[in-house]
Image (cartoon, rainbow, N blue to C red; front, side, top):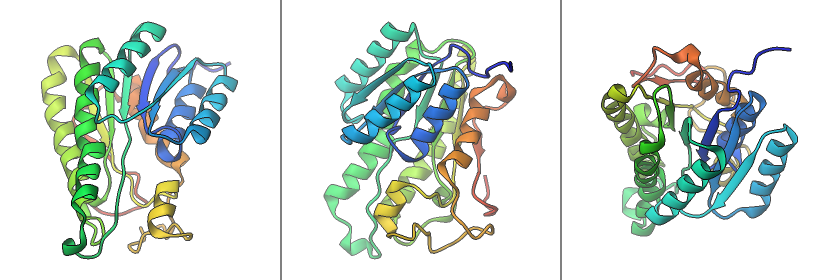
Length: 250
């Protein structure tokens, strides 16, 4: 029987009811981790994720709410620490996007929602979780290839993903004295429910990567697993790029 890479680790993940977050949660559970995850409001898909984790023989807690709510973040972290005895890995994955092909048509409400969900909520949750992270713990943030390439229909979304790269690098510097590694994953086009909702049934980004297809969430999840394990002991402040061959700087 092989050794599990995350045996008895405690993981807190945002946006894990579907897409990349769910794939990461299931892969981490397969590798022996107990999973606490946060989702916004899709109770049915969240329950499906929880059931799959429990079937794998791991513990699971799920929280429904908005990570832009500081008190909600505190509740989630405190409950996770109480139930699991700590947090070893924090995965900041939650995000939203509202496409618009003209900056003049961007709605203020959607701009604020995008920043609140994608970067402000990430910082708030990390702030609350940070005191509980010990030496050897890891933080993994989901950014995107659009942070480097831009995207003509996702101006504000791309801006938040760029902010996540800078946040990752800065927090990595701050975390060195505690021995905590902070990294990010920047997928290219991925076939997820969010992509389907944004760009239609074909789930295709207009700028296809050289592989000529979108990645699956499971293919992207493997990068998160690597960053969560001791195999990445010398990696911090970095971004992995499972993007199908798109050349980016950084």
